[in-house]
Length: 513
Image (cartoon, rainbow, N blue to C red; front, side):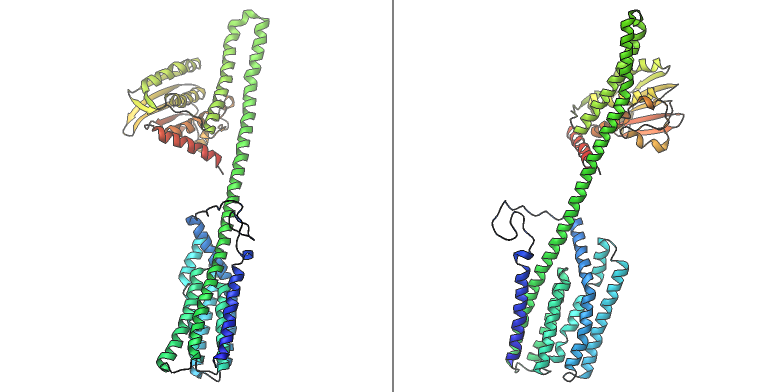
């Protein structure tokens, strides 16, 4: 009698081992880093695998679930076809009541899984990773339940049906287990649960029959079947593990390739944006530089032909020279910011002295435009870079003077609970709310704003970048037609933190999408 079962089980086990060796062969393994896929000769040192991030793990898990659900319908169709096969084989061997009861349980499980598949297609298939993980967490026990029903089928035929019918039933159960390897191996926990419950239920039924009902008095081939079932179970577990590793590696590679493509796309776009920015700057600089340089040439020719007009031409030459210097100062500031070559010299800065130096520089410009220039300095010191801080406040004062047609400008330092701050008030044109966030972008000029045609759109951009590096937040309040106030909160600057912020500012430009 054992001869009827032993060849079949050995054949199935050998087929499973062959499938494992086929799966693990070099042609079906992803090539390892540093080695050829078809040989073992290293061509370069092994590269350690990348560490999976939480986002990658969630995406890979969701794709494994998606792959499992794609094959779930075919699995259910196979299960549905096998139910009448079992009924026809065991119709004359098993009690009718037991057959009907088992058939109803099997049909109920198949119906439940069809319902879950339909729900997945309607509500989850097009959703993201979190929806897939939550859905599968809710319904994952259906697969072990199905395995239990098929494992309980051994109650109908083990040591109860004829040997021929038992052989057919064992063959069908083994085929179902092998088929589950291909359909469920995408999700390791599911395929292991399925195999463990299927084999465990069958073994429990067999041990109950042998030990309790037969009191270990049955034929010897029972023990051979138990041994073969245990071996076959472990072989299938290993095959499922290897297939799962292949699935997971493929999805991890797909995710990282996608990330690499996205990164390359962002870097390419950043490079294109940088080129566009430089082109816009060169175009703007060429346009803004042409007028003062052309004026310098005219004034020089005029002075050469009529030296007696030196007193009239000299101020105009000076103004044209200042315009050229302002453009180059802005250019050099932007280049230093973008290259990360800003040198920091953090030391105590005396605020009244800083404001007094700025007053000497900008009061003549304000008075030349018929504006009042007032300074209100509260005694105090702050840890900062005196040159960069002077550059920030100077740009704010210069803008206030340029865009104030009448009235005046107030430069003040004040103390508050949050620390010292510098304020620049003007009674100028004001800035509409829609433009207040945009004015700190490079080359941005407020449309229709009188006076912007003479600027380069870099002053407030440089202010924002320098203030971020020094850790001095800039605030703005403005009313159109009434004036504007810029507030610079002078939080103490830490040299290391400032250097880190400068490096981060450059990195942000490089990685800008």
